[in-house]
Amino acid sequence: MTKVRSASPRAGRSLEGLVAPLREHVLAAVGVARKFKLDGSWIEDASLRDMMRVPLLERAAWAAVAITLVDMIRTGLPADGVRAYGWFGVGSSAEWSALNAPLEPLNGQTNLSELLPYLLDTYGRTTRLDVMRDTSLSFSRAERKKVGSFYTPADVADFMVSAIADSARAESDEWWLDPAVGSGVFLAAALRRYRADDRVKFAESRLTGCDISPQACDFAAFTLLAEVAGETQNPLATWAAIRSNLLAVDTPTAARSGDLRARLAPGKGPLRLICNPPYATGGAVHMADGRPTTSLYLPFIEMSWTVASGLDDAAALVVPLALGANRSSDHRRCRSAMTAHGGEWTLLFFDRQPHALFGEEAKTRATIAIRRPGPAPASIRTSRLLKWTSRQRSTIFSEARAVKIGQASIARLVPKLGSGAEFALYRALEPYRLRSGARPEPTKATASEIVGTTLSADVFVAGTAYNFLNVFRNYPDQLSWRGTLSASGINRMRCATMEEADIVTAILSSRMAYWLWHVECDGFHVPAWFLAELPLLNMQIQKGPAKELARLGRSAWAGLQRDVICSANRDRLTFAFRPTEIGDVRSEIDMLLAGLIGIDTDASAMLRDFERQVVSIDGTVRLARNKRDIGVQK
Image 1 (tube, rainbow, N blue to C red):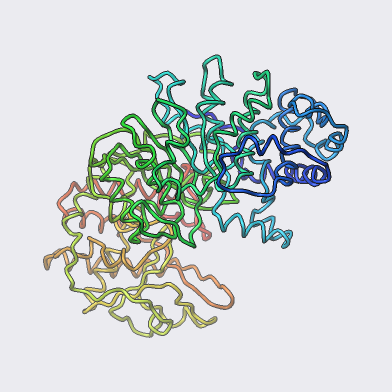
Image 2: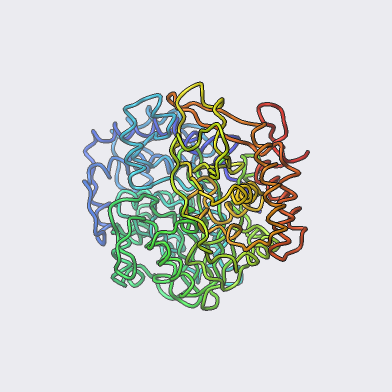
């Protein structure tokens, strides 16, 4: 089990919440250092291979503060700029004493070494709460979001390093590459794992990285220096050696040219590629086949076989959930290439609610993608979409929950499955994947279509969901009299007859449909394609079961109307019909559907357990506001 380090979201706090108060003082110290007459030639000498350039004066100011912080970590003493200046080996200057006052609040911080990579950050405070308190920070937040740059917590980095490090191999044989190195969190995790005597040599020769920012490469070198600060006899030479292995370059472009590995490889040995690439969308980069994509992280996924191309190489990346769920052409091509180039892939999926993997400042759904040597086509293991609370964080980093689905095609999407029973059910639904063409395509509903005095042959599904799919028929008039009804994002499914509408209501109200939505979608959006391709709606149902499903659909709609939530957003009303009153009806529907598919009716129990885990999250049953159970029993 991975130990949770202090540089990780904990106790309901985000990592940014831990770092931001301290970083204010670091930024103040940088402001002081900008007034120094700094010689930055040693920085320039160590970064001669960089393809990107930024003003040296700004880099030198940050370097002065970084050196002082590393010296504080090394000695455990209060900030002393003159002492740090002399220790590092760039001479002696009394003006560095001016750094002592702004850094004084950091004196005595016992976890300073773990927070260092996050303190070296030019963006500053950028959480949503920060921007709400101070609108002048909105530009920094916008810039961070624009490039998709967010902190990697230390526990995420430690888990990913341990996942691809070969315990049977001498550690000195492996070399590490972070193609989006940032301030060096992953390389620091690899260095912490190294147990041999000469860690300085390992840091100087086996840790490599790239970043489009020269300043980020500087920061990463200081992060690694801090790990071995007490072991080196020549800190300046050690920093320079580390920095010379960090290349400021447009990494996707360099990777496409085919020489990135040759430019960075320190010699023989298997490569361990590891990174948290930019999450941003917009602009355009090119994938390995030369086609453009606006998803900046996809070329980094391709590096797991184009750069980490050796037989013994491995890779681990933390990327958006879209890697498995997005159905755009570039994502489909990437997933097809993942399969074609072989290996053993493990894909672990993480939801954003109630807590996100990266903390409050990056509320995003994420995937940890791990590639090890394996067969071609690739063998795939996948996990359920994990929802977790801060109390569970120490237990979520495990591959034990991944389910092997073999050499299955993942071009369409990657199913998020949590057990062998779920895989069996998903495979049993596959024959019904081809559409029967009996129903029109779902359309977007208008407000007038979802209100009526009499029941229509339409079924509606809200465009977002979380603990239940919001399935309903046209509203009774009395639900909308208090304001203007919103139909934003609501899907309308037109049915030929009332009986068909009742059957569709039953199927969409089932736990099986809710489970399949989790398996194929992102745990929030309910896209029209999911409803159009839903295998449960493509089955040819005989007259007897159809009559029973229709009856259950009518019972479901009657029960859904007994627990309705009304919410208002700018005077626009929306209604949610919760399935809290139809638990028994849903179980009957699930058992009937299981029989039609031809699988064990114990699937109904599995689906109840799935819902309990998804809704309860950490084992605590959450009650609805009206004190009725949410559909799971204590």
